Length: 308
Image 1: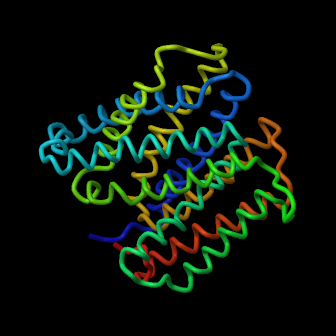
Image 2: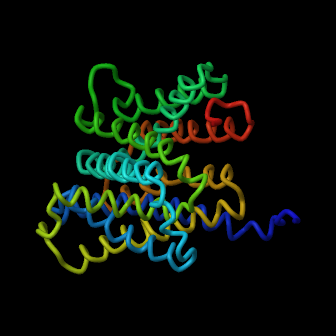
């Protein structure tokens, strides 16, 4: 089978960039709902997972029919899926949105992008193998970028609250777990089925705590528009476009292109919500994005500790 030409890869590039932009803007929409409309982060996470989960499972049923339920046949796979939904999906969604509510969409998204560093650390320990040079460089960039983002270069004060930093780092750890835990499932079952079931399980489980049938905040056309965007564009379409782009241009290039997500969140937060973002914030953002680029290149080289 012939490799796709540069012209044939254009749709894949557009889809990867679109998914990153959709994800970034959805973070800003969440900030808008928290700050301007008084919505609760836990409530938003619950409904986002439940609705998007149903949509993705429906999509999986249409595309795969009976195979969408194959994941439940073996107890081992069912247990993995339950853990992914409850500990992975809920954790990564809630810590991210709560981090936004404590700071802003740009800062929370950028802090979450430290997650790949924790993935590297996990595989280094698992394989008892020291990280390669490019991964040490990525760690340095991540730490430097985070320092600039939360201190603006000062060793005496923080520019965001300690609570926001804590939840931002927790979000990065949750992202690492979310990335590592379902690897076994994704080798056998489609991403749409795994993610759809994971979201639905997480949403239903979290609803026992959040009681999402009680609406809070101000509900008008702006609220509905932002909420719909988060579910449809920021979850379902972003996920579908990213997966489709991987089939066209490959996982490495797709991952590199989606690293514009923090930039998307930062730009929309600055120009839409008036978030203050100084030169040092942009520099910190650039350093953390450099982390993603280096780790992706390290993974593609075949020598990285990211290899399973």
